[in-house]
Length: 198
Image (cartoon, rainbow, N blue to C red; front, side):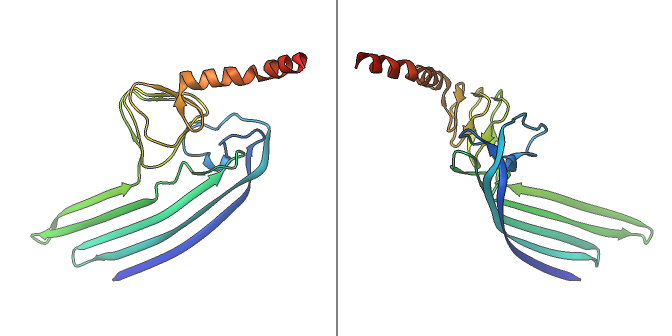
């Protein structure tokens, strides 16, 4: 028996919990790792969507062999409180699976069988000695170079060079980002100084 099945789907997500301050965080990314983000002060203003195409071809066991092939092409996007559309942590764009086996009968009572299973999916390449701190979001189809360090609550949207430390969303050189944040904290002092001069 041989069977083919196809499916097209679309899913729109709304009222997803996101942070009140503008960040890339969204609960829609939870479940991609083994932890749960310890973030409070959330509000239900996040959105997201999924759409894709599924294909299945299956031959049930008969005449000594069977196989199952599945293909999934999909897109998965979300928006955090900063309003920027990004790929979710689950957005690999494609997954292909192949499962099959063959069985031979020897002398009526004995059998020999060979079975295979393989999966090919869209991936992110993380090289040796990479450190990703908590709540790091990574886009699809990119490479994080050997020895790179990505500090917490960062969003990786492009390939990162080896041996450097990154921070921010989108990620930049951590030293430059820290200087930028330090200068931003001093802006009230600058405004106060300018007001006093007037």
